[in-house]
Image (cartoon, rainbow, N blue to C red; front, side, top):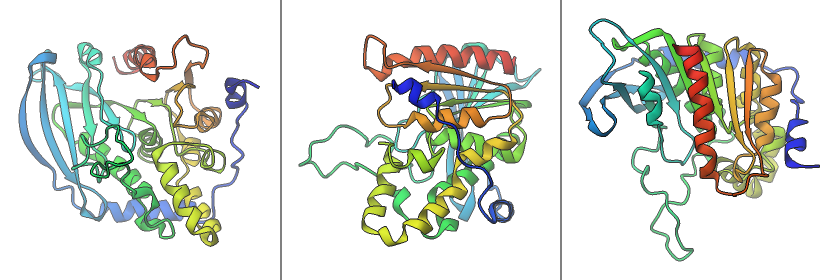
Length: 324
């Protein structure tokens, strides 16, 4: 069976939500609401090479953690007479943050979130030899607090996503009726979470989504988060049942049930890190209007970078349709 057939036939085996799933998330969101926003609009400037301006925005999230973000607005948006639609970018774990300049030409603003814990390391990821231990190869955040879900990293990322949407809706430059999210990998799970609980987004573009259908993907994914979890499980096998129970509460699959907005998914089957099975299972489960763009393993080159123009074209068409 080809990888495509194997992935396409992956449906969610998850039925009822874990016990106390609803009360857990209600309690966590209520705890977040007790944290003041402490929004600080800092440095502002121009990005002359792309004809846009930027505003650095910092805010508090769960446990009063300071989240860094950047709002990028095309100069041709007339903010005196109108407000801008915006694409919120949730990046993948342990990856550089990218945004696609072509969408600025459509007068879409970007709100780019830097994941917690990534403040000091964003430029440190690069190929290293086994003898070079000076460069960080992994953050290890996903191997911490696996037995204490209230303090777990992925749970905090979900709440950060919720707080980010609250913050962008308060910015005077933004049309709050036209907010979309582009989430990549872990960021795609964050996008599904916040859109399910907040109901304030217009559309989602999910690129190579991860942290989905963990019962299947946790054992086959080669992503950084999965490697960190599996490394912990290897030396803490006795806690495996408790850990899997905790992770099930965080599975993006359960958040998909309540989505009622258009979703477009882009999956590159040549991506060796993210197990695409989870994306397909998530896609099948989505009850809303949905579309999928697939980069197959049969392309002439194995370079994942070649998939970017194809996914960007799909994203551009999708955002124009849902934000204009």
